[in-house]
Every structure is written in structure tokens, then in C-alpha cells.
Length: 376
Image (cartoon, rainbow, N blue to C red; front, side, top):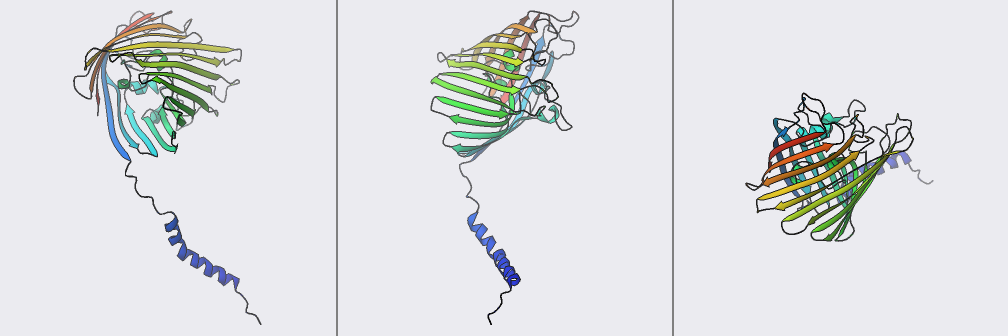
């Protein structure tokens, strides 16, 4: 009579053997990778302190239509941040926490939708981004990162003049989403993003937005740039969508060893909320930065911004923000890591929009600001 097999006992025996062997198999298959000795971790920071005097003397001390400098007749910190960066051949990341009046101004429009959204937390984070290299010439990054739009950035030291142009202040400085950077050749770099929306971390609708950027180095000293953005800016409760298409071109070039030129021109169009057509706006600027000596430079800017339908800048006045501006500045580097900048800036608008103490809004505004900044 053939022996019977106890399948229950066999399953128990196999299971026990598996439990004994599995740790050794797992250890052999997923042994920790050796440490990446090429990874580099760095700490840094930046402090930009300033004093600004607005000759219109705005009654609340808040300066309108700008993020930098945002306060009148006040010693304050424009931007201070501490950062941690990781760089290696296959992974990268940056965490930067920030504070300052430019931060409060720039993040004031962060949406409140729900009980755990809004600017209270969002404005603390300048960047929180993690990236991985997916091929020899492509990176994918995710998190909160600087915007792909425009030729001027949020950090003052990285721009040729201290204040930002209107076209920069009224386009995104930051985005939240996923970014693909692709080096097509030694001359062409492309960027593609899928983000929550037009400078917002907290969401206010179910749609996501997309954008792209192309930087083409025509020579070692000159780069041409194109960038765009496409997204629905209407809340979910709106009857009609409000698709926004924004694009711009820019150029950055060193004409000689002393003169740097930076310029851009942007144009935006958006569907009207009532579905009856499109609204549009545009802006542009040109900056010249001339290095007088190794430690001193003169810089100037001309700019124009027009938002007649008040899509981006609500003024509740006829013609909206329809402004010409000009700036002249002087930069000094008294010591390495130290930057002292002074700028005189003026505006002229078609209608009275600039707050002015005692006499109501004015068509004109004049500002002088001086800043002492330290990088460490």
C-alpha cells in the first residue's frame, strides 16, 4: 500500500524552510549598494537687508505692484534663506527655507482651499526638490522649484539689477510639480513641466498646467530663450474654463568683457470668465550692466507693462496697469561674498494707481533703495 502524503504537514515544512532561507536570499539579492563617494553635500545661505524710500509715502508702508522691495521707509530683510544641496552623478536635490518681505509679498496670492492650504506653510519653502538622472542627458525633478518662465529670478544677487521688472513680478517665480530637463546638444537645453498652476502650491481646481522652455546658446557669450505656459485658471466652481496661454522670448549676452545685456518680451492671452472672448496682456524690459571696475558696476533698465483687461493686475481703474518704468543703479562688492546695491526707480502709469499719502493715488512713483547682501 503506497504511503499517503500529508499535504498540510508538507506545506508547513516548506513554509518553515522558506522562512529560514528567505533572509539569506533577500540579503544576497538586495544587498545595500556601496556608498556613493562622489555625492557632495553643501550648506549655504543668503541675507539681503534693505532700506527703501518711496517718495509717494504709501500710507500703509506697503509698496504696491512689486515684491522687491515691498516696504517703504523701513529697515527690513528682503530675503533670507538657508539651503542644503546634494549633487552627485545620478541624484540631486535642494532644500531651502526662507523668510523676508519679498516672501510675504510674493506668496500672498497662494490659494486657500481647504484647511491645510495657503501661504502660511508654502511661503517658508523656497525650494524642496529631488531629482534623478534618467539618461546621460536628462534629469527628472519633483517637488517645489523655481519657475521655468522669464529671464529674472527671485534671488536678488542672481539678477543684474536689484529690483525685479514688472513682467518678472507678474509671472511665476516658483512652481510645484514635475520637471524634465533634457540637454539636446552642447548648444540646446530644454525644460518641460507639469505643475499645479500659475505660481501656486495649493490647488484650487482639478486641472494641471504644462509648460516648456528652450535655451539656445548661439555662442559662449549669448543665449536665446523661449518659454511658455498653458493652463486653466478657473476654479472648479466656475461656469466656464479660463485657459491661459503665456509665452515669451529672451536674450542674455555679453557684448564685451564689461557689458552684459538682458532682455525679454512676454505676451499672455486668457479666455474671459463670461465666455465672450479673450483678454490679453504683455510686458517687456531691457537691462544693461556695465562693469566699471572689478568691484563696481553701473546698471540701468527700461521696461513696459500693459494689462488693460486686468487679468493679472487688478487695479479697478480704466486701462488697468499701463506703465512705463526706468531704473539706474550702482553695485559695489566691498569684500568677497558681500554685495552693496543702490537703485533709483521710477514709474509712470496712464491712470492714477500708485498709493500716495495725503493726496490719494498718483500716476507717478519714485523709489530709492539700498541693499546690503551677504552670501555664505
